[in-house]
Length: 364
Image (spheres, rainbow, N blue to C red):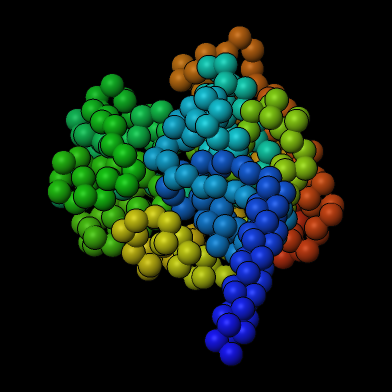
């Protein structure tokens, strides 16, 4: 009896081992079949659809193993793309892509997910916030003269800040600019180390909440300053060699963008799991203020080109010739996703048919 029981136990153990080995083989085969993509994303509100796609398995269900890495700026993302550490990256397709191409880093936008398609320019998640007790007055642009302003050097926020000042006719040489990581701006402003900041959401919402009545909201999500289309970019060569991965990646982002539009509170909760220390109420406010339209319209295309060329005129970047739309963005993938999956876009309003109908025209 003991020998039969022992024999049965050994048989069961061997069967279990075989089952585990088979399961491991199947799992390994499945993982091997998954196409791996490294995607670097910046720690701001604009990446909300990225986090939603990851949390809801929208890429895994399409055969992609997308590995996220969170960075502090678009410049870091473009450097990672140039070095081959990432295949896809999250940046402002207008400003950051223009700067990258000017330096010889031939990146191109492939799939936006933060945009207001009825506008030529609407910087929905950017802001300029100051302290009233330091004399910053939203009604008086010259109140910035002699003040210290925190920016993130080389970022879209720097372009936003300086273009706002230019349009207001403020002498920027009389302002002290200091570079501060965006996530450090709330404590920097709260402690009075600077007089004002150029930030992005959800850190703007945090600063407005923490400063209370002392918050001087100079500009928040204004139109007509810079084009602010944020999305996924990649090196031109990689895009050409990996069309299937790019399409599935873009489809996941289109679905995720719609989830953000329809379920902003759920999206905000997901956002707080990726950005350390972000208050859920700040995140919810920021998501609701956002523009989650992934379409490239006639308005958007015009804004991308003019913003890039304005950077050349302002001396922020150097180019031998002006940008055209195809330098900054390839519509092939988005056009196909819209055709194959109209259900991910059917809640969006029609886009303008002519440039004259577009809102948020940029100043010449």
